[in-house]
Structure formats: structure tokens, C-alpha cells
Image 1: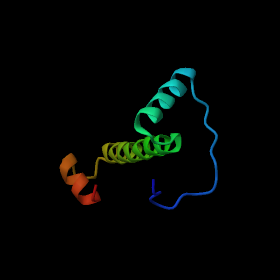
Image 2: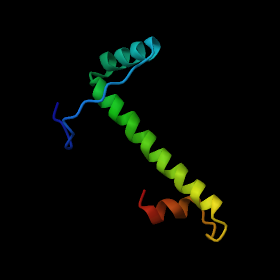
Image 3: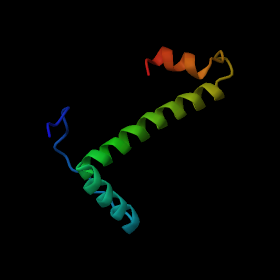
Image 4: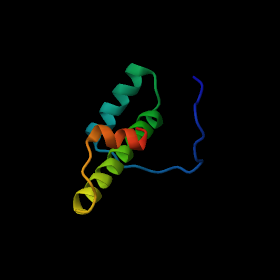
Length: 79
């Protein structure tokens, strides 16, 4: 399997609940993907969602900003 992208050499220890560990192991075996793959994917998804949430919250709190649709916001942000 070819790695795509450039990754940091730093390692981030993460504590998992036994249930999370079990589910992650099962998923890795079923898909033949690494734990790192799924942790990176989950973190990427979370960071993207958190960024959108914070942007929406900032716009909500700034009453001088014009209100736009979610579709228009995604278009403007290129996401």
C-alpha cells in the first residue's frame, strides 16, 4: 500500500477506551488499513467540522455580518 501525503515524524499517544480499541482493531482487520489511517481520518473530519462550527458561531455572534446559506458558505470556502 502506497502512502499518500507527507506526515510529521512526531507521534501522539492517545488513550482509548477498551471498547474503542476493540472496534478499531476489528475495523483494521476487516479493511486491512492501519490504526494510524483511521485516527488521521477521524481527526481530519473532526478538525474540518470544528472549523465550520467555529466559523458559523463567529458569524452568528456578529450581527453586522450578512446571513448566507450553508451552500453559499461552502462555495465561498471551496469546500
